[in-house]
Image (cartoon, rainbow, N blue to C red; front, top):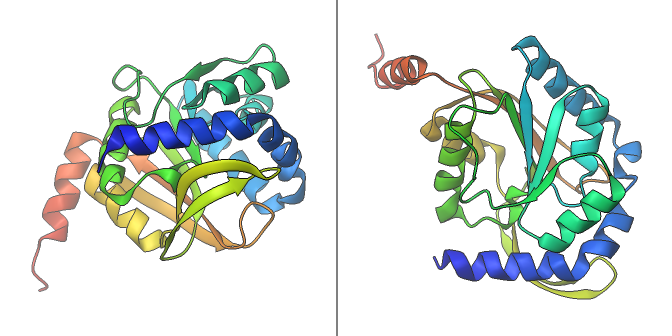
Length: 230
């Protein structure tokens, strides 16, 4: 897979639609009570594990970043699209937003108390997911919570326009929760909860909670999973 190719296409696509995207999704959480509950639970998990900085990776126009900040979480946003970051800074002055990629997170090891990827993994090809989750694990503290939102399905489609009819060129990948959970397990996460739902966010979406395991926990989990039945 040509990483630079799909990243460049995704960046250009969201640079093109940034303003119209922000307008369309600005009030989406008002229509999604279950998603708001999931975000509130995530905020509670971060705070009960001691608090600290949380990265909203693939933050888009910053609506999830701002919602978590309103819940008392020290959240900042990262997005591949410079135009999206400009919109996020405009719409949420005072919050921190940076241009960056989940394929190469410029964050220190074990520096994050939590991490969110809210419908931002949907453009990452299957063969890049393992590397992305490895970065997530690297930057999270042991037992740090991870919250994922994504579209459910078994297909990938090329999106050629969207958000006001502007041209786009990026694949949207729909995945089964079980597959995402397996990838997380391989990357050193323990999946704690998952649910599927239909809402304004997605005709069929999934929300998944996981925690970064410590090296000791990961080793124990791998040993246990390889045991033969009694």
